[in-house]
Image (cartoon, rainbow, N blue to C red):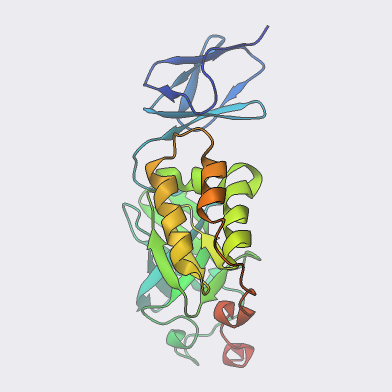
Length: 244
């Protein structure tokens, strides 16, 4: 028989018991001891179907394979690009990680991604201190325009919400385009960007509060829904540049 000792979004400390059951499995920041799943870190309990996790109240971004992150190209090497993703170490986007075939002997890599470009990329692998990115995922993009807002990476799950409920609400109420990186960087563009930023601030400060979705809905109640912007801001480098 399952015995859930802590409720969803209840605060726990390391070693505190969350559930006694073999029907649940430990997720992020949790471990099993016998039939009991316990917390590894101080944070909020998250129950996703049968997976028990703890969302840290405050923690740096630690890359995991499969994460979508927002980063800035900070240098170009002969075999790829170094990207700042606000992790303990910079990430690397290799030539093999882009969609096009590139021969660096025939075309400068800056024609594809230049220093200062902001990209939405997938963490393809982590090996020790090495973090590799890929632009081959269907969601990967190079942003044009817009602005970047930084939030605590630990609050990203709350910003997204269950099944994307919170971020969908913000998009619908403001008409803004929003892309959230697991590293705590958020790209947005639209006429009501300030309302988005205000909502992000409330979510970050009150992530442990009950009824947060309803509160954000009321906060944005007066926001006028705008027509979504075009995809011009999200264009990949022109295909002509990829012909080498």
